[in-house]
Length: 203
Image (cartoon, rainbow, N blue to C red):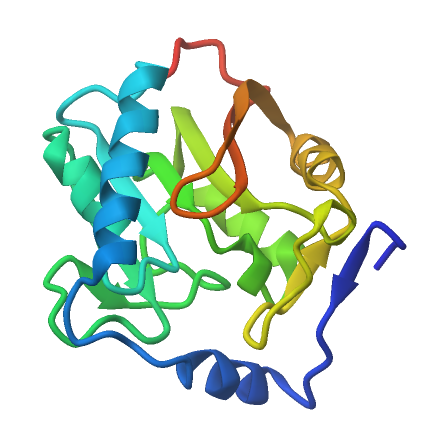
């Protein structure tokens, strides 16, 4: 790992899974989740790149607020998480290190959880694998360590600056279509990417 990134140390992958799955879940959507649902919906609507009917996979979706944001737009959306909310019908158990969907099967992959990756290269490989040829990736990233966001208890992978993360994403064959800051429900950047090999317009 270069100096631009830091990785939390675990004794084994099983220990990583146990640690991530121990994160408390909410029994119902609270104010944070309601704000997340509304703000993601507003940003995706402003992008104009996700049409109704698109198939969307949300990674690390917890209680499902981001999934609901895409359902609000008329998409077919589902989330996966190591510890899905007990009352969320739209989030299934799943590990984004080994996504259970087949190759080229979804139009949009959304995640705000790259900072929970055990192996970021494996996660990015899985994202690209399940994405359709004309699909897009939407990453909502927290600010980096140098930008005032120190890692919390459950973050496993973190970056020095958001520019470092974007450089990593583009090094994996993804091209930035849009990128802009946001401040709800936390401070970060909304980054929309598409495989550089795609010759089709985004979904």
